[in-house]
Length: 428
Image (tube, rainbow, N blue to C red; front, top):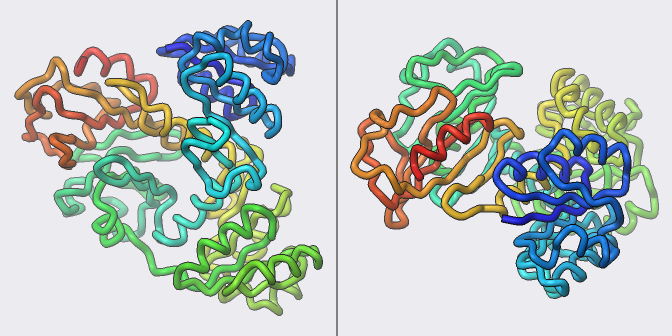
């Protein structure tokens, strides 16, 4: 498959890194520093602006299967997407930062002719809302037959083996993040303090097994695109929401726009102000200002005053681990969630990267062609992979060792990225 990517920022670079392993990838970029980073990848580099028709032709857009416009400029992405479509590319995917161009996080079949438009700010807001609506989960991902969640191991399961958890038959622990390591668990794997479990199963059972006390009172700092969209989503639920912004004019607009949210004008780094709005009673605080440093300060200050949970928007991807290490419960990057949304869309025939978890674990969907009538226990999978689900005739099943895979089954495999090549020959 021929894929052209416009822009080699964090999203474009990571897409190129993953896709170039199995496809012919061309990357259009102007910045010399980013071009230098691309030299480590097996991609063809085209210097120039993707809004220039001749540059698009040089990248072979006219014979490409997919064009991904993910530069940091909305207008360049939109214009290059239109040009790519006219030049003959089969599919066009565009990233836009301004929600005026799209009224929801992910929009298919856009009126301008794009197959998919992704708004990182709205995707991030939706992701944060999911964390609050399904308490205890770091991530919540919906697949064709089940749900994948990341959940922090709670005190009651430290020291227990996976086999001792007495999980429902349709719930399976498929990976563990432990410090900087990835553990593909087996029955005898022991859960340790600080582990983050990646779990597959039915949403209701996942909530029953791993859910936490419900979040009721939420305080949002920052009334921009992300903060206001989160408030709108939460207004539809049972939440008591307070939205804080330091700009008086913005607060007046938000007060008119939001129906059930209390809008307050103030500084989230002012201790007296935080005491006045009783931030200590918040079940969750969400810092969504335009400054990473301010978001960190607000998060830690609110937690020190008694807020139970802190969620922060982080623009710089390299800050995510730092934020979580110093006490922020969840640090989320718009670029990361955009990358994940695009990976979900880029489902490829037969062997498809369904999604990437923390850019470390791949969830792959294979069509069983070589395997027929074989038990999972007899597959001889490498230690870096585990079967997480089997879909047969539209029915999703959480497998066990004695589950039999038949030819034509769709098999979900959880693995590390460096394990993919070993798996391709097994099913295909």
